[in-house]
Amino acid sequence: MQTVRLSDNKEGIVAAARILRDGGVVAIPTETVYGLAASAYNDNAIAKVFSAKGRPQDNPLIVHISSLDMLNEVAVEIPKEAEKLAEAFWPGPLTLVLKKSENVAQSVSKGLSTVAVRMPEDKVAREIIKQSCLPLAAPSANISGSPSPTTAEHVLADLDGRIDAVVMSGSSNVGLESTVVTLSVSPPTLLRPGAVTVEQLKKFLPDLVIDKAVLCEPLKDEQVASPGMKYKHYSPKTELFLVEAGSEAFVEFVNGKTDCAAICFDEDLDKIKTKALCYGSVSDPKTQASKLFSLLRKTDTLGVSKVYVHAPEKSGIGLAVYNRLIRAAAFKVITL
Ligand code: AMP
Ligand code: MG
Image (cartoon, rainbow, N blue to C red; front, top):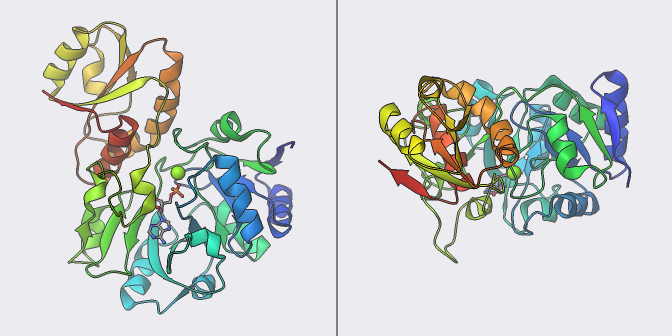
C-alpha cells in the first residue's frame, strides 16, 4: 500500500476525514504523540490499526472526540467528576475511562465494558475529528514496542507502506502519551501518568490512587487494570538501564564504563567523557518529556551496546517520564 502524505491545511484535513469515513487508517498529529486513527464505529477499520502496528489483541484503544456531544455518543452514565475534569483539562492530555456506549465498536475496548476517551488539544486533530463526524480510536502511530512517534518522520520510519495516509504536521508539544484515569472503579485510579499530573488531579479527585503497575513490573499472568501496562514499551534496540543517582555519582558511574552512552541532564553533560544525549535540565521535566522519545530513537544510531539513563524525579510530569523510561529499560534500575 502507498502511504499518502497529506498536509495539515484545510485540504489535507478534508482528505484525511474522507479516508477515515471510508474505513481507512490515517496517522494524525496530536499534542501528546502522533496517533493512528480509525473510526471508533467500524470494527474493520480498527482491525487495520491493530495489524499495521502489530499491537497485542487485548490492548484497548483510546477514543478521541472533538466535542462534549460526542462524549455522550461514546460513553454512558458519565459521573459528575468526569464533567469537572473535562471542564478543567479538555481539550488536553487527559484520558478518562468511563462506561462504554453500545455505539462504540467492540474491538475498540476489546471486550471491556468501559471506554477510554480524550479530547485532544491539537487543532488539526480536532478538526479532522469534526470533519469526519466520527469519534476516532487512535493508539500511538508506531510499531508496537518501539518509542512513540513525536514527529511525522517517526511515523513514516515505522509505518510507511502499512497505513493509508499520514498528516504531516509539527512535532508533538507534550511528547508523552496522555494521563489515563479510570472513573469506572472506586476509588478513581491513575492507570498511566502523563502531562496532567497527580498533583493537578488530586484537586478534583482527592481520593485518587496510583495503580501499582505505574512504577512496578506486573507479575506474569497478573490481572492489570489497564492491559497496555503489561507490555514491553518504548524500547530502542540498544539495551537501556535507568540509573537513580545524584549528578556526581551518575557521572562517575558512566565514566567508568566502556561501549556505552549516556542519556543525561544538562547539569551532567560537561563532565561526561562518553557519548551523551541530553534531555533537559534536572529541574525541567516538561522539556525531558518533549525530548524523550526522539532521544530513545537516536540511541540505536550511536553504535554502543548499552545506554545509561539518568533517572528523573518521580513527581509532577517527572512521574510520566520515569514511567516510560522504566519500561524502555525493561525495569532494569541501578541505584547508586
Ligand atoms: P496507547 O493508545 O498506545 O497510548 O495506549 C492506550 C492506553 O490506554 C493503554 O495502556 C490501554 O491499556 C489503556 N486503555 C484503553 N482503553 C482502556 C480501558 N477501557 N480501560 C483501561 N485502560 C484502557
Ligand atoms: Mg502506544
